[in-house]
Image (cartoon, one colour):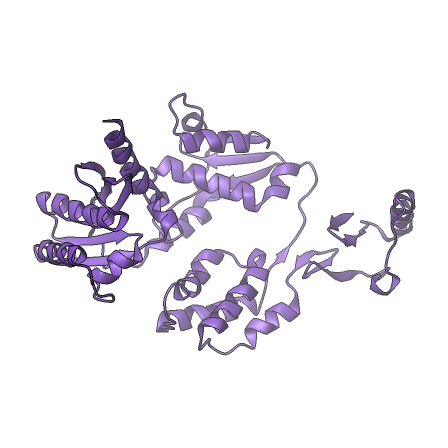
Length: 386
């Protein structure tokens, strides 16, 4: 029996047992004085719609109505139509293999004014073609062990600080995501994690990072066993998926990335900078501001510090990220600097930018700037202690 809020589904493996299962259900309902709405009840069916899915003895299938809604759609022409598309995709997420890769372009268009590119159109048509033959989710056999193969690659699925995780932590993150997405399977089965990486050893180290310790605690509720990968044939499909997520060469692979943030309190300020080199080395830099500064001024000081450090390291191409819309907007000439102090900051920033071959300035969401925000707050706290 499956229950979700006020939806109930009674299912039997054999037809001759179904009446007994129904009797047991009705006895339980009478015991707790619960009533059913007869007009919403259906009995003796081989398949039925439940929570938006089609459930039958074969397994769980995509709702044909939801599939048809996407197949009949024309290409989105507005932000609202893209939002409508993403909502429909969310309803079919369980039936879309590598859903992030197939649908990431749609979600990216929502961050800015609608830019429906040729790549978006190709992804949209590929999704429609894929959904024309939706797969079937068949039930697993009770008590059997389930094998989980892991692989990671440098894809857009890793956002912000996740992209800078060591490979072993990315594998651990993949395991955590799998346990959250496939929670019913983790609860009902022993999960055999097949990997050629020392994942269990890394997660059990006394000096493991805070997030690794949290992940170990989260996984402790499941029966997870780590096994060495003994055959390449079983891992081949996973490696194939990971390998071919990198077929397109990143045109900005020769750009250093710098994250900047500034923090102020009680008239004092701290600056944090994180630089990511071409070889993915991470450099962290913090500065205590020895003069009163507002929050906007601290943000500008962080940008100036990041540019100065990058210049001293001989960087030629740079992607500069800040989470303050005002600062990035002024540097991209979208906003006008009106205060004299802001004008001077903007002029000094432009002067430093002229020392590079190319600088791309981007406003990033606050959650992608958390790591450098901690560095800035650390600098500020040291200032306050002094």
